[in-house]
Length: 312
Image (cartoon, rainbow, N blue to C red):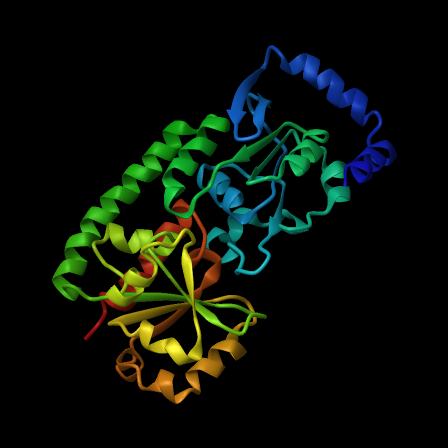
């Protein structure tokens, strides 16, 4: 990959190396040094050509009022387009998160590359193209991540306002859910396209952390199984769908996973679940239910209001 970047830079940009070198000299008095997981980078004061290497970084920057010029698409889950809508019209597709198109990245001449969890090798690779920042991300630590990215692009005030507004919404909805649902238990599941099993998401996951802010909870059996887990999910075979029994169930579908869901739905074991008999099963978009940030969190709240507060 490193050789590919060197070759592409030679073919498409030179003066790319000279341009980047002159920028470095210029930026010394105009940039901010940002420390991150893999080192430190000299970030332009007002980057104009930002590239992001994952959908969560894209979501954060859009929420902060910025418009990256290019981004990757998710490897498995749905993309963020349903919640980003016209805000990403015209954005250039760099391919899958696991294999971004290096040729496009070099041609676009970014002045900043932002992404989550680069390997040291990929960080060195991207750093040869433009200043690159590696962001720390955990599913339940998305608020900290929002503030971290906001600091990088000098949008801390905007991020704080977004979080303040979100917290006000949580406090308002918490009472409504308590009055409507009491101690109801909610299952959150994910169906994959190519993997022949499903999962329930536990307390380490992004969506369940939002449920817990509302004082809602996953079923006790799920919590006990995942109490010692260091991942945000637990696999569920057809034989153990009893673990999914709950007052309501949200199923996040990856693109093309309908066939896998149908296999479960056709099972007599599935059909015996009270949550199924009571028609309290709701399919939702994995693009914002599995991983996300402030916009995804609000979209999940929208779904919870739509389905749970309208119970008859």
